[in-house]
Length: 119
Image 1 (cartoon, rainbow, N blue to C red):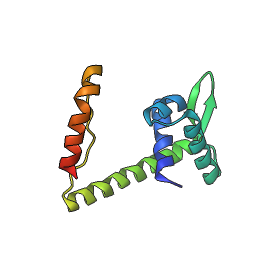
Image 2: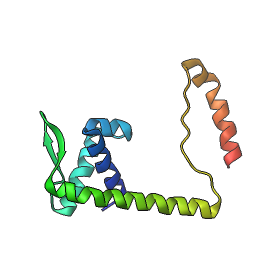
Image 3: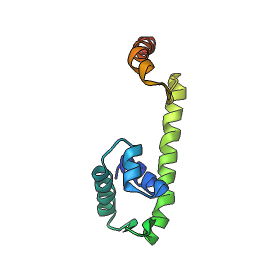
């Protein structure tokens, strides 16, 4: 079992779609489907019901297992935060909104400057 597979299955459940999850995680739909199938195979039980009309729903086993998977992910995040605090590193996600001309002209210079400061 891998944390990545846990993250993928929780995203699939949240979005209700393999395709939406793939787009969100910058993966192919096939890779998402394969990750879920591998986790199900490893556990020896189906976690999701795939129905073209009704969409994706959790099986009974999936309903019981998903809270544990979410708890594991929560604990992993807590571990990461503790390490960050202990090493005095600042982490996080930066989202940049821009327009085409700024993306091609200004953004590369700014990102290079930022990279130098963080290195």
